[in-house]
Length: 234
Ligand code: DC
Image 1 (cartoon, rainbow, N blue to C red):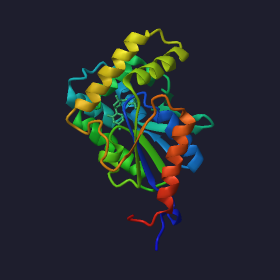
Image 2: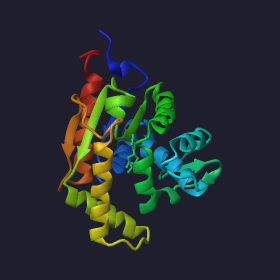
Image 3: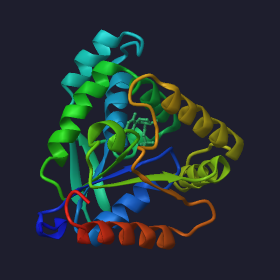
Image 4: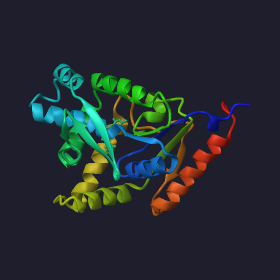
């Protein structure tokens, strides 16, 4: 009998809407398992930042694709997680503004942009021992991932979490604006034709409304450990 524990590491997919706790939970779970954390949202955000700075119209899909093809994205690991480096510049903060969030949601609906990142993400994950977080990891990027999670939380709580995050960074947004922006972005991400935000049929769904990070993390770790102990193909 072959068991997954004997393999170098599996691919874990974590999907869900914004503010569901994906980034924090992926970071912590990756630390516990000694896996590599790949934030695919940050990759889309980095391309959106490049588009925004270039002055190209977001509707000019051919120009957007040509530009994105040339953007270099790197994750630089540090004690707190990672910094996002693009063409030598640390863009970790610049990619998190509300404007870039909205633009990211728009360009991520374009087929050519998704194609560019799909290849890169598959390349990064092919060796296993990785956790990828995003919207379409369990449905499109790694449909055969050994473990898939779909994280959710009430729209109110997700909006409130995003609001607190923005305030911590010194942004001026109001709670109402943030709730509306999160709702608009989720609607856009879920309604798009290509790789929409959707729970994979075999994903474990965890609703974190009113639940502490620690207890969601323990539940996720338990699911992963159970899966590691299962025979392959089971
Ligand atoms: O996870 P995030 O909020 O950083 O993602 C930013 C945007 O990128 C999100 O609105 C949708 C898009 N995205 C995507 O389409 N597919 C992914 N795998 C990850 C993010």
